[in-house]
Length: 136
View 1: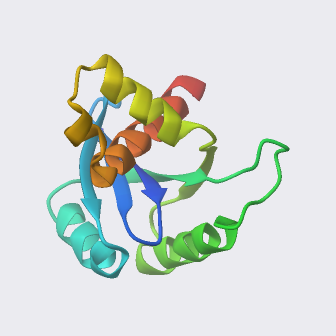
View 2 (view 1 turned 45 degrees about the horizontal axis):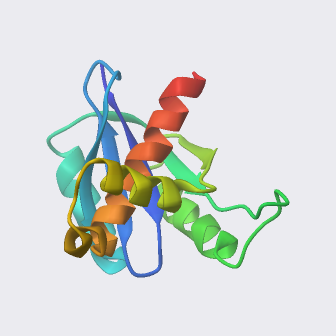
View 3 (view 1 turned 90 degrees about the vertical axis):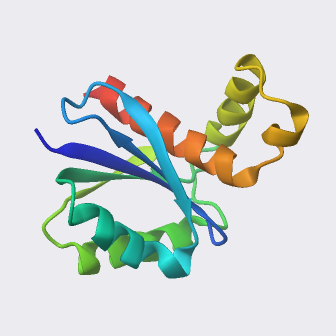
């Protein structure tokens, strides 16, 4: 089977998570700067097969768009243009950063490691992917 890949898009970093080939377990893969993203993804896809991209869709508590919604929409356009053969699916990403931070606390990470925003983005992408897997 092919993998499923999820993204927690940010203007400074993109957190990336991926499933195992059986699509059972979601794991953090990397955090990449947006300007290096397409090169990173092309390299990854040259070695691994991915059937679906899952993108965290930012929404407010009132279920409306947010300030970053336009940037995420542009990111999805980039994915569709760069990798047209792979479908892109949206998943509500509300609270994923808070959930990621809480999981770091529960996992016993030190305060210094919990301040690592790249790690938070990667864990957020993993939560987005796990949410998608659970909803199927």
